[in-house]
Image (cartoon, rainbow, N blue to C red; front, side):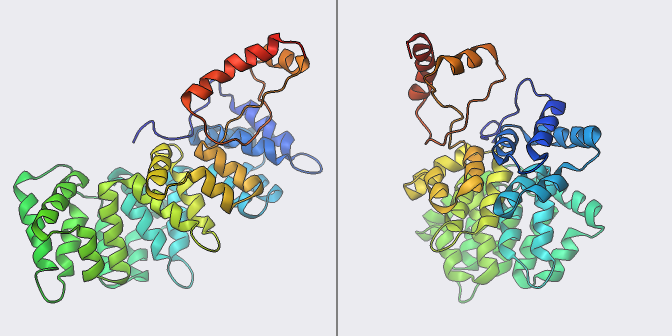
Length: 366
């Protein structure tokens, strides 16, 4: 959903200036993590790619390698993820899910179920360029059975792009006949219909299925399937209904219970920060009666936490300083960035009051 991201391109952007700022933040003893995280979370991905190029031109060094050498832990992982292009981030995530012992089916399902057809085509193309392997072959070699069939269909990126009025009822009936109406399950019918129809068409089919069977399609999938096939079918159904709601659920599950699934948390926040993270935040609050901001703050810490919160739009880069000296600097320099303070999201009316408060403080005696 265009325009519903939390990260926007910075106006007046200058890649060389940003490259110099990052260089100084990592130069000498110690690293200024605050400068790094504030700068990179305030730039779009396209702008970060320009900063990478400018850094190499100015200093003859790879910016990502420099960041890796200066940072550590989950904070490093998050910052490095920000520096990858969106398609390369997905490609790398898929590659890591496949390679080595075992397969992370959850990552394959999440990415392939939630990306658009154009995004999947770009992923397939870039994966081939980067690794000289077919993504379809690599996935097929690592998973089997009906899960493999469904993932292969998703990788074709050939969903019908319209509603076929004449087949809504017959699709609902076919799904009913394949599961609830018979002993055993005809998995192929679920795979074919859910893997090839458009999201809008599927939503109409789900409504027809509800009238026909008396319950939601998700309930039938839960009863009639199991394992990886059940997971991918449920993911496809949820994404057909609402991708932000599905990803909000994934985020909640990544922070539910003891421990945090940081890989999932990073993957979703980074990959959706310029697409629909505002919608994900709204769905998170609606479904789980708490804010994504609060959940992240409770589950993470340090610079890692600060960076996630900035990406989520859950903090404001403002601090009211009641000193004439600071207001003098603030007034004379449009480039001044107030020190970072983490505060919860505020209402539009409260946000609108900030400039008034600044003006009031500026004119009042210290």
